[in-house]
Image (cartoon, rainbow, N blue to C red; front, top):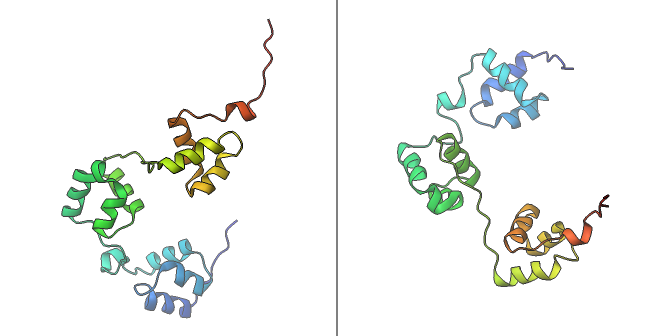
Length: 164
């Protein structure tokens, strides 16, 4: 159930004054409302959006940036492109998807030492424990184990009875 917010003139004045200077989350917290309620109120007060006013924190992608992403995403990957464009890798990945250029998430290769750690621990530790040792994600560790032909099936596999 939603709670109706009684906006005061003081709250509206604060919103108008700081909307283009501070983040919506910050203003919402100060006013004691949700971010979505704040954004609805800004629209109802006809406060120009940050993007339209040119005060948005994130700059638009230029045509040059878009061309660079299209031409290099598969070869360089999102992380390297993000560094070159001074953006986040997740932002570059999303932009590539919106452009219709899909990339698979590449897992960083294991070093020889990391492969040995994985092989040595696969039978006795969980993927989560191994991932912690390798300082990697659990799914990434599982993926590398499959690529190396390693399996934990013998350790925790359920025994099934065959009825003839």
